[in-house]
Image 1 (cartoon, rainbow, N blue to C red):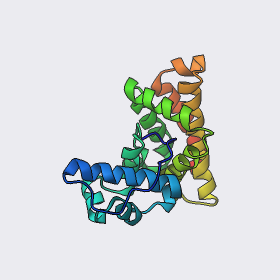
Image 2 (image 1 turned 90 degrees about the vertical axis):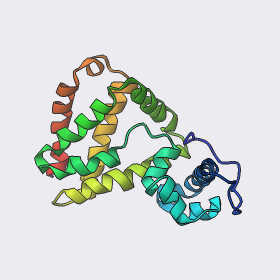
Image 3 (image 1 turned 45 degrees about the vertical axis):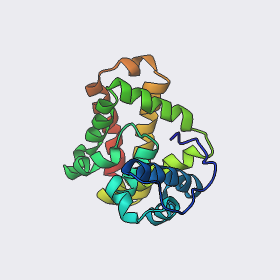
Image 4 (image 1 turned 135 degrees about the vertical axis):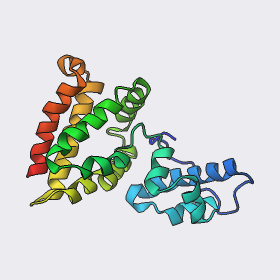
Length: 202
């Protein structure tokens, strides 16, 4: 699914066609519609199951969590939400560098980078896609970062982490600012990671 696509209508609530693939297809189509209509936070596994005509357990069987289903539906190129558990588990004063390093290393893979750049280019400013993508990142990434840090304004500081990293990805991979685009991953991770750490430290 393109995160820009608006579903043509609701899928009926009858039983899906026989077979594992048919059940998966019904769930994906239902999820596309639910996410498009209700956003990431508003869409529920129960609502998706009802629309697809399956039991909610079938969604967990085929896809796992709501985040797993969403990233499958939109063909998300990287899974920062999955990586965060390990990234946030270490010392707080190293989270900035670890987080930036994870993303830069993931995007060294050319197919992953192409997919990520395409998603950024097509989603920014799109009335349907932008809030959908923002909702996923807010729920699955920014809130988890906020929960890990101490002090005041943790929600704002976690959002600033997101803005710093988002700006880096756009400048390095979309705008391709020459010096930044050519800089080694380790150097960029160290410098930007230090900036990210200032928000984490409060």
